[in-house]
Length: 80
Image (cartoon, rainbow, N blue to C red; front, top):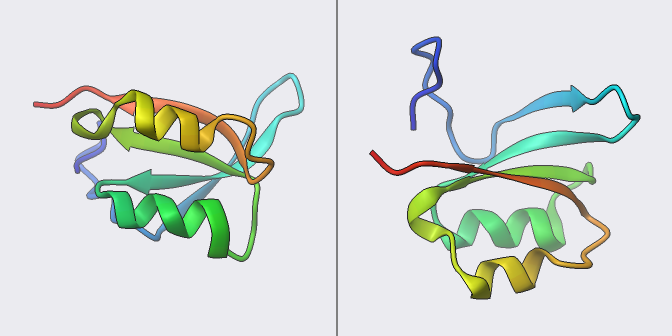
């Protein structure tokens, strides 16, 4: 997955983030379902802001994220 700057984002790499409203979290790129499990249960520094590959966007994934205290938000990257 490529960022706008041409930088390649890799799963299990994170970028710190904070919004003006005070929500914080590490951005976690999810390109396959196994990457999501890391953020949901074993990642060491929650909360995580999930950047989800658009091909994985489904009700099943949304239900896994909903109400999980380890997840602070979701962004979906449109598939190319």
